[in-house]
Picture 1 (cartoon, rainbow, N blue to C red):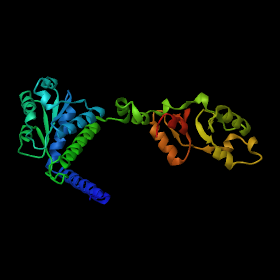
Picture 2: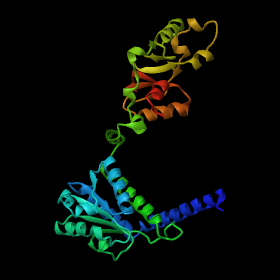
Picture 3: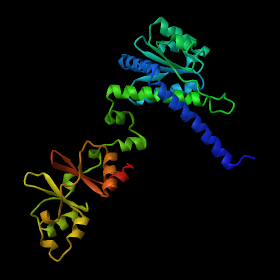
Picture 4: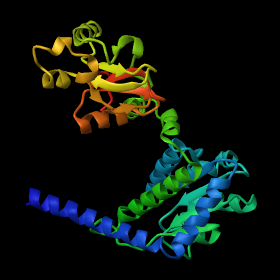
Length: 324
C-alpha cells in the first residue's frame, strides 16, 4: 500500500532528477551550446517579422508557452501547429520571420514541411532537440541540442525532464530577448492590464490623493491649526513645506505621541515634524510604494517631484485597489 511518505519520496525524486538536468543544461551553456544560443538570440532580436514557434505533442505545449511568453515580453510571436502548417498555415510564416521548433527526437514527421519551408525561403530556424544528428538539428541554422538526461518517469518514457529543459531554455531565450530590447516594467504593464499583475503595475499617480486633498502647512503654523487640517481632510498626517513649496517634513500620529505635552497645541509644526520623510515618485509602481510602506512600517507616502509634493498615497488606497 502506498503511503503519504512514499508519495513525497516520489515527488522529491522527480524534482531532484529535473533539477540535476537543469544544472547540466546551465553548465553546457558555458561551452559550445552557449555560443549557439547567443548567435540564435542575436538573430531573433534582429528579425523584422515575428518569431513563429512550433512543436508536436508535449513539445507543442512547450512551444505554445514560449510563444505566449515572448509575446508578453516585447517579442511578437505566434504558435503554429505543425499539422495545420501542412494544410495551409505555412502561409502564416513570412520571409522576414524566424522559426523556433521543438522536438525531443528531432525527427518528428509532422515538422518536415515546416523544415523544408524554412530552407526554401531562407527563414532562420532555431531547433531545440536532444539529438545532434536528427533531421531538425541538421536543418537548423541554430541547433540547440539539449543534454540527454533521464526522464523523471520511472519507465523513462513520459516527457518530463525533456520538457522541463525545453521550457527552461525557452524562458532563457525570452528573457535574453527582453533584455536585448530594453523591455521595461512600463512596457510589461501595457501587455498585462488585467488581474493582480496589472494592478501591481499601476503607477502611484493613478492611486494617490491629489495635493488639494492633503494638508500641507508651513513650519510656523501652530499645531492647533494643523490638527484641525488633519481632521478635516482625514489623512491622518500633514506635510510641512518651506517657503518655496518644497516638502521638508511630515507630521504623523507618531510625531504627536512623541511630543505630547500641555504645550503641544501652541508649538509650531516645524518643531513637531519628522524632517526629510521618505517619499515616492508619481511614476513609481504602486507595488514599490507598498513595499516601502511594509519595510518602513508606515501607512503612507507623500508623492513628490522635484521637491514639490503632488499628492499622498495611503496604504488603504493601495489595498483597496488590489495591490498586494
